[in-house]
Length: 155
Image 1 (cartoon, one colour):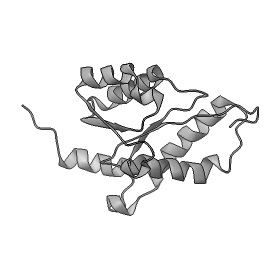
Image 2 (cartoon, one colour):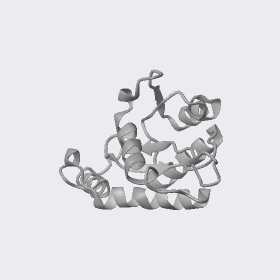
Image 3 (cartoon, rainbow, N blue to C red):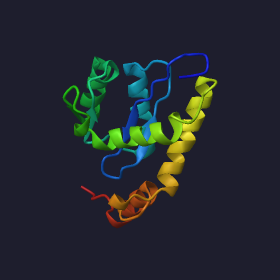
């Protein structure tokens, strides 16, 4: 929430394989078109659509726009059961860490400040924080190592 009392919503996008948080959309409200635009930006940077996306059942994640994005990009969609956060552990873990380490201790004056600070936190998380699940490599190091040791197969 900002100091003006406006609520901030932050859906997270996390690569389940590399544990790398790819985006945190920060806004006062999130709609399907914003979700699709975020995913398009990630696909543009990565060069390929994901095999599937795992979502909760929020309205921005069950809308036709997102279903169409998945269908046209060849990605499957896996929706978790309502009230079952354990079915989406990497996103839940990321969100919990962000809440504990940033959102619970910062007071945002503006939406822009919240966007900048969450972006900075995500960069720090990806670049300087090696989880044991990735062999003590940061998510960025793990992704780089995997890409170098597993080049794409030419068909």
